[in-house]
Image (cartoon, rainbow, N blue to C red; front, side):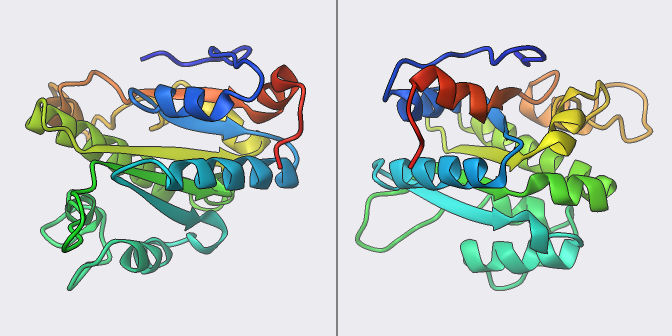
Length: 221
């Protein structure tokens, strides 16, 4: 995994940051940090618009301030991904992991090949319920890796972009964070998600939104 702990590991030319971020998400989930809430909101809104015009792409918005429990997460996911039943659990035959494995099918339209989750205010849940946050980021990364590992060249790409402030940055820099380590699950040998994805650890990178804006010499609007 490539994980930036100093300045952002990828820089942008003026007016090109959206495709550069998109290209980075071909291989990584992203933690995007800014102290100012409005800066994060402008960044997310701009990138959401850019994603929405990409072919065969689905964009799913999650609001971290309303995801303080597993019920909050499932309630939002049910509005984003059609399902007959979603159990209030991460694992299991009807849990979150199973739902994330579903490929969107819209009659009369080409199949969706890419799904992006934009997770607003991820630092709120990271502070309020760190165990649930760890479960969420791990299952999102795990299922994403599993889909690619299992499907080979017929890849359904699924990526997450987590937005937050200093608390999320602290979480991302923690050596034990599920953002960049698999849970050992108290069992010897290879962690479950490493076994099913073929990845030693999740691929997550850290991006400073404010440095990105400064490197472009322009406002995100």
